[in-house]
Image (cartoon, rainbow, N blue to C red; front, side, top):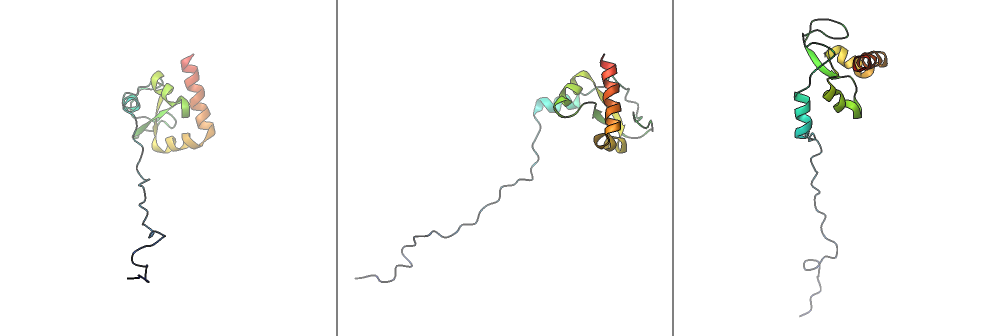
Length: 111
């Protein structure tokens, strides 16, 4: 018996498979050590009395490290934390004048 139709028995090219997307929207979890540092943040620059350091208004405040980036953890260790309202916190991240003022104040307190 001679088989003339080989389309059902052999296919040199495999059928394309559907690619499964990896979930890239997961947020990287912080290490336990860093999470503990963030929970235990304290400030030598200001009391936590609900007043913003920049504008002085009585509002709900966020903790803001004096130095960011690679020096952020050192700011947490040394207590260089400011309490800023949400609007001033956003300004401090963007506005160089406010950021420089906060840096200079923290440097004076260290020395």
